[in-house]
Image (cartoon, rainbow over all chains, first blue to last red; front, side, top):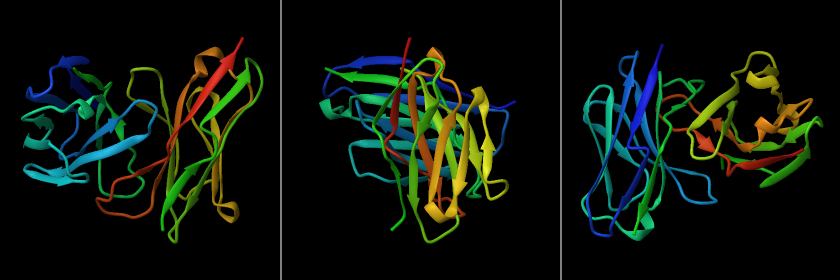
Length: 114
Length: 114
């Protein structure tokens, strides 16, 4: 069966520090991969998605970036964190490009920028 | 324009009473529809999905949803609420094939009172 791992679960970082969040998927090949952010009291905001190695689409311009160095690995990064980067970050995957492919989510990373 | 609207930001029910969480969509295309549940500090879990087969869809944990094209609705119901159902619920719509990401509603927080 397919599983998705996301870490760390919680992270407290000072303003201006770098960020690296990692997500890996097991049990499937060539998944579509996604990074979402959920701010307190708000819905989900799509940040990045990827349909293959090295292919990244950005939905919202900001100081975050994403990379996909391997088929089942998706990394969210920042060179310098802002206070506004605080939130709950969720990685997800889907099995194909058809519109009826649901997303499968990791357990999320709670990021607090101080 | 294509959109999804969850009509209630917060719903409160007593344990053992029915649950109704409302969702409407706007689209020129025939959509695929999903409901997800999110418990505090956790990722989103797929409850059920509609993909143009039967209009009444049964999901996990006793939830079901009915697709009504004439009303452009996909409301989530459960006959009898349990305390463990207290969570955030998201209605999600996929309008197109291809790599277009899903569109999330803003969520409905369900509270269950003992």
